[in-house]
Image 1 (cartoon, rainbow, N blue to C red):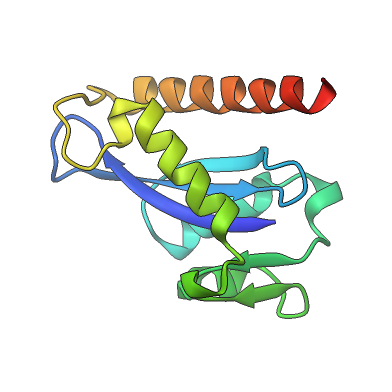
Image 2 (cartoon, rainbow, N blue to C red; image 1 turned 90 degrees about the vertical axis):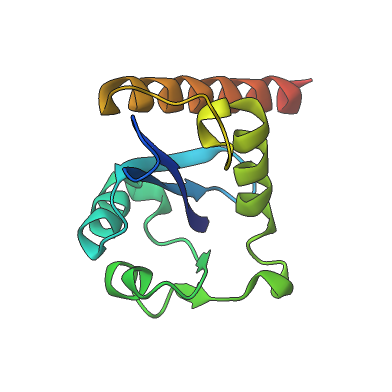
Length: 138
């Protein structure tokens, strides 16, 4: 799995909302996500949302210290972007930003409430996963 986080905002630019995402390296599908702050507590929530079949998988993430406290040292690797070991999740972040105006860095599109922000994010992830699954079955 590859793990990363990216920010957007709800209502105004000072109210950052972080998307924590876990991507399967083999299928490139989003396995789990959490919206919220950038705290260790949110990292724990993202770790809890990962399905049991993925809990023992090798994980690659950046050097954010919250990952160290959530994922065991035996299966976790903290790597820089230059290694290419998080390229799938970084590509997913770019796809999300290009497909969903809420995640574009300098945007006029934003969610007015956290509920609609999560709904739009969930819809994007479901459509993304279904599109990947359809392309793999052809």
